[in-house]
Length: 115
Image (cartoon, rainbow, N blue to C red):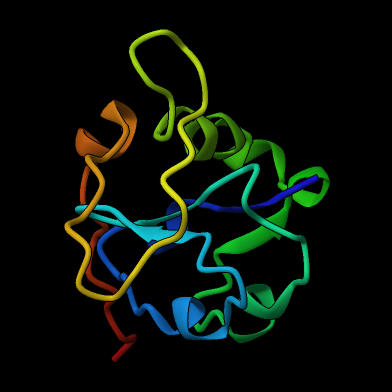
């Protein structure tokens, strides 16, 4: 069971998770990062340092974020519906195209402080 990145990463893209991943299975997209479902070795290093708490084990994803399990897999699917094996992300790699749901995700409202 791979780890997945949920919507908390959209438009944040801190990227510290990529530095902790020993197998380079976290790929930068245009608006968020994605974890490759078969390259992930489930070590949990990325989950432990994510500053926005966006990374979860697949079976721990809350119902509100369930679609991100599918999103993290589908972003790596080729035209035949098979998971591609890109072989690991590198810092200067071009971003992978975002999943259609992520592409159309409305931006977050800025947080306001109570006065």
